[in-house]
Length: 163
Image (cartoon, rainbow, N blue to C red; front, side):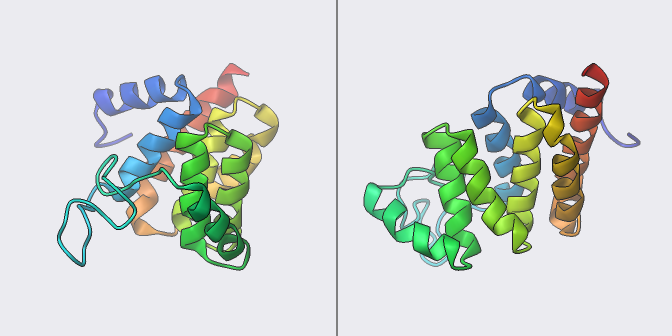
């Protein structure tokens, strides 16, 4: 807790009481905080549509979803992560989002590991807490995600005390 403000802890406490879309959105925001627009053209819009929370657009057309599924199941971590965010933020389908995050997480995609861990923490299913802890600790291997993963591990510890 050294170096952390009370305000950041209050945010974590509030977030852990929110719905799943808000929780995963905050995690994604931590991951993508430095990204702005399309890095190739410099445009604030990417080829995937207008920005939502920085350069991310979670909306996918039905054609894009159909195109991304085979890629996601055949090892494309970006495809599985895009699908997971679509299901988490647009469809609000936790189970499908977890399925997609798990595809990337099992292949070592650190953002998927962090997002899956956060999703499992917020599921309020204490049977999933051990799995959440495992994914969050794996995500910490990516130095960019250490603070976010540690915040989620703190939220997990508080959730365990409440059960």
